[in-house]
Length: 70
Image 1: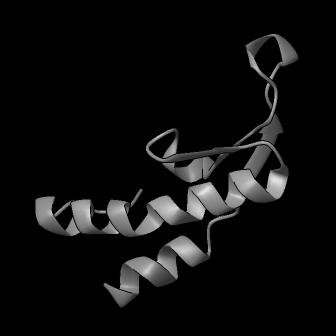
Image 2: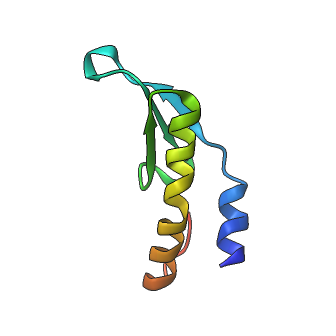
């Protein structure tokens, strides 16, 4: 599990603004993972925190299915 955490910690998050007509805010993703997990928020910081909150669930799923990170 530590190997997965270390790998993900090396990924760089990308945070982009969402269009105002779609409610605004921000979307955060790890480009290396596509849109496997995403984070959304009113601010860049909220979007990043939402993304990071999804990491444990992703790691658990990878372990259960014996999948590897890209």
